[in-house]
Length: 614
Image 1 (cartoon, rainbow, N blue to C red):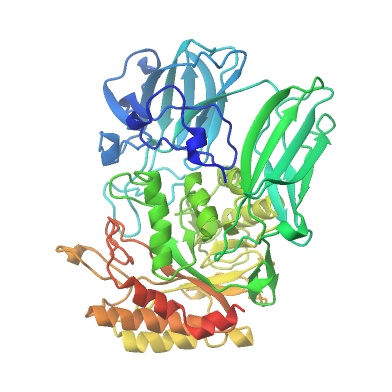
Image 2: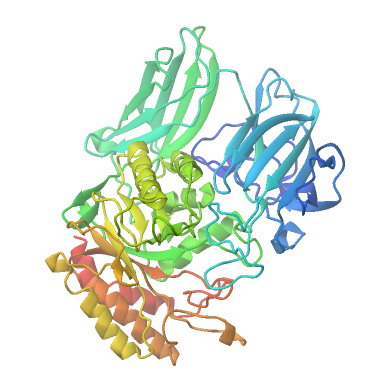
């Protein structure tokens, strides 16, 4: 694969730029400009800044982008409610970007964003987890200095997709420090008027082919798309197609049989792809680099197969929070380290929980063979009935979910989608907004991606009859663990009879009937183990272990019950790290090991699980 060294940002010293790495590894152009670093900044507590002229004047303070103002790394560290914030920065456009269309990219801004350049509004976007782009054609030119102004409005006590961000002042329960404004990389790149949009790359393992769908911004007579596939030894496949017939021409790259390597956790091989657009005169008008993994995900009975073989998914819940960066990793290496920490403890993947992770994480998961489920930050979206719906999801949930899937579609590490988490309402005689939203988000994922299984909601209210997989959340809440583990085992003993444990709420059912789908417990464990003073205000699930040895006994007991169940295709242990009031992680919040990882790994490498994966 190409190295990040080939895609260093232009014009400024990398040493002075936080998070300087290329933010979109699967769709890379050679020229780009990282805009991370110092910006002017001002809090607009009353959301009155537009009327007060903040779009047209210097701002009162500074911030270190891409870190949110609530974080220490931003230099602001203001954890109060920030209803609106403003950013301002002047940028010199490189002189060698002449005759180009200039694009301004935002990795993620939370939540409702407006962007002005040189006083002209160039973009609006709603959603705190997904990227958006502003076209600066007619405004920014090579060699000029432009002024970028960004306003982000984020009423975090309103009903909106926010993940685990707290609607109270301080972190509490399962709710954490808020993120407002810019929290992923801001950058620019030049393209021509005719340019590629992000391709969708679909591996077809059966035929040994990669299918490339290539949207184009504009078209011209005689335009041709060319693609090459390389495996490290050189080009092994090529394809070419006329690109002036369709909005998204398709190219098929067939891997020679002798060159086929399946992407898998024990061999996460990635092929390099280069795509060019050539005009009628033979001149290259656009060139991008990408990569792909040749793998398949399928369902056979109650098994979820990778490349035609069952792989028991030993997942860990990863919420992607950091002590100093909140939702933004302090460095690219921190993303890598979280994956390797998980693997060291015996997990082979993660539920990326209540947050659309930055794409660099997925890039490293692709490289390291780490299995992940892509999720959306919908926390708080639920309803109890036709007259008591709470934080009802609207069309914006579906719109933002589609943006997330479109961004991440081509990553081989993603092996499933789940748009909602713990949505709950009892079955009754009325169809509610939550019913509509659950079906809409499920169908949106299925329509956009036919290659991966989709779960309608993780735990609780399964409202789609033909979901691909079925799950439950099951924490042992008993004060006496010995009694609790007996109940836990009993709850999961009848899966072989198609009678799995299904979450209930109150006195009524919340889910449609189980119909023999692959089943897993997608949250369990969560035992508290404190490593610091003052732990009385922190928590885990159920009673606390009385000793380190007691923790190992509990971890082994719950994992063994699920590993030994031949009808279970995986599990997800809560969780990778402690977070604010939660001390139920495998690691502390600042990523120090709490346990003997070799012992945790040995527990999860039981013969039953290994045999079930053959």
